[in-house]
Image 1 (tube, rainbow, N blue to C red):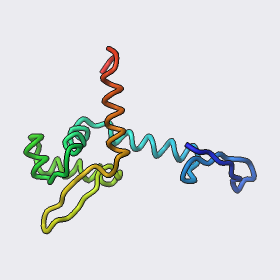
Image 2 (tube, helix red, strand yellow; image 1 turned 30 degrees about the horizontal axis):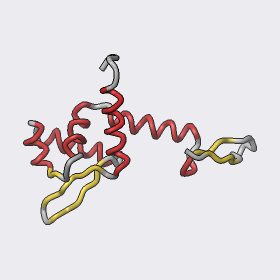
Image 3 (tube, rainbow, N blue to C red; image 1 turned 90 degrees about the horizontal axis):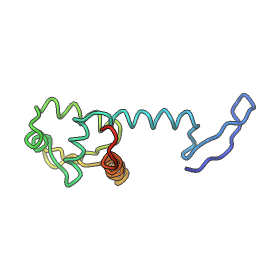
Image 4 (cartoon, helix red, strand yellow; image 1 turned 60 degrees about the horizontal axis):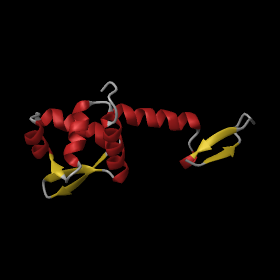
Length: 119
């Protein structure tokens, strides 16, 4: 992650990270992202979406969840830009937003699969 120096209004120096975020802003956004990943139901939805785009009904059937529960979790994932939607007629298809999400999932699964530490 690139870092550049900037001068805040107070005249001191502050470090800016990629995309012009301060270290504190970046830390807050990253913590928020990981909080979204910190729910087993959302992980199950993301795992289902790794292979293909799916509709809410497909996710309900595959995960044994109600439409209300799936829609609620998808709204959280969509707001966090972890999933995206595409409309086809009256149907809405859900998919992982981009390859960053796929990599986060893959790296997380790889990490928890290593060693014999606590799950």
